[in-house]
Image (cartoon, rainbow, N blue to C red; front, side):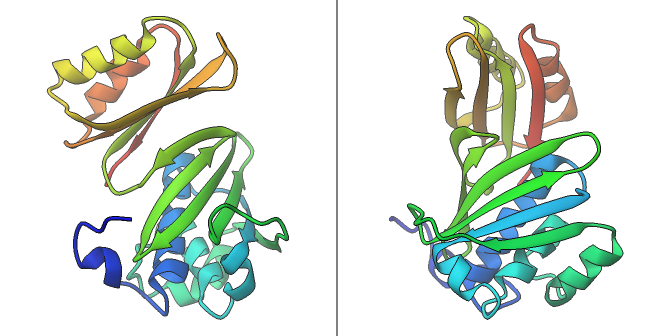
Length: 220
């Protein structure tokens, strides 16, 4: 892969020991927390590949839970995140999976409370860089490094152009966009990474669109 700077190789400011197993894991957990939009009551964490083999020694467990508590990679509370999660009323379980993943540093996170459920798959590429590759069974590619909008909608003509028209009205430039659907005419998902900050009024304008059922804002 191509690196944009030396920081993509040496990693971010972080609680160690590993940029991929600790910092990357914390970022995946924090993206999951952002997408869930609040602290979950339950977190089921399924570890694959290298994550499954070394997660305790490299602090992957405490890093993911730290991310779920909304801690950044350098937060000094990460080593005690399991205890802090318990004190906050979050039930956390870990499972080591035997399946061979496409990427060695893979985790599946299932979050829930009394009102909603969320499931995602994240990979830690290296140097603290991550990708979310699946969200509630939708295939996607989300880095978590840029402001992004996730739009859940009915798969109908005109929805995509309506969303991009609103972005243009707000003078928002699209850096990356992809659309996936489970079945023709059924539920679909737009993932849009942008170059500018995302204002609340933009989110509200998209929420008003016919066939749009949910809008999630992710801020860098």
